Image (cartoon, rainbow, N blue to C red):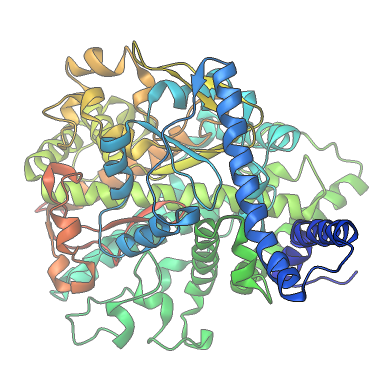
Length: 614
């Protein structure tokens, strides 16, 4: 079977839509010629054919708009207010967003639009409705109370398909249920409280931090923890880690040992070592980093697809740009999946029963292989869990250390709890982590202000109505097959939900004092770092354990943390970010960005002071 380039496939798909207007025009011209007993002048025919496409588009857009108005009115509802624009298709807004993306704080446009249009509005892009909300009740509707009326949708599935296939995060219906059923038993309490993997890789990571700091040079903590979570996740999934921590640690651009390209690395985790000495040749990349670079570059291109919406194939006309980056991912995973399937076949030939219960010594892949012999399905699922297990945890650990550097009193209190509960050197247990109440509150505050997935979406399956969230507010009509965007980042920073004086302040105490009863208990859907409903994150407690474990080990070893973004100027936010009114405490010394998950642009550069006991 011949495989056509993505752009050509996309154009062929559009042929019926593109040919219908001129065909209709030709028929109309022929009828006019018969009635006029004379042919229509050639120049008028050409003009009519040329105008057939824009006129058809205008008619289609107006028909959809009228249809939505009529359906909304018949339900006693209204469409959410549309964001104002000057050019057709909101092209001017899109251009402004791309421009602001380079110099403004993450989601600045969304914050500004909520001030102008309220917490729910229609961000209409390229003539397609995109309903945005940061209203807890509507997010609750999407994720929980009316879960079966929303799905990921075919457009999002297509954009993520090359990287994530039909894994649990990129599937709907029965396929999603199957993946969820396969994976859920592995995240039992017994499995997620085995800390051997965490301890081994945490020690390796902190040794690298200490070695770099002894040189008198700041270290990129984001780079360190992205490697820690990558090695932990790959060992957890496959029983074999990619050993990314074996690669050299990057130097800041102010260091004479820095590579020329390190001031503007392309990786969102800002690791110059991911790119060798600045040469694009993969031979110059450290062997331990080839998988990391391959996965990261594929993730970046996947995220870029979302900006071009359904027309992204035109920007990958001659080939799948995501697939082009995944060679090292395939080379690492394919043999491991193949070996797992061969072992299963050998056991079956030997007459052994394949028990589906989870064994203490098995990896996630060894567990999944009990359910299917489909190698692609196994690969898709493990890559989905890898993305969730690596990037989201790395994000939280990055911004945790940023908060500890910015708020010394918080660091002192958290470290005191660590020393009181665990001591200066003992390995923490599950019971230790459960008993550290301030640790949990601290992590929750990091997740509130720096959620790993700032913006997410679902697609409505059928026409829906969202009840007015306040007295006197009309109900909102949501057309079928409409993309519904929701932002927990914006919701987590709303002053009416978290307090007018403290919503934008970093204060872990809010999760321990009377504010829990005042704000969170009456409305638990105001805090959703792990989503909610049937698709709530399976690895939620696993993530809390991994983050807590690493922070305990960090604070046992280091007593102080100082932010040193000045050592790597590319990591210093521009004024539009640093002084953003939507930033935490009105300023931000780290540049929060997002592809599929959040990260600190160009890294988080810090110095740490070792504890006397270390």
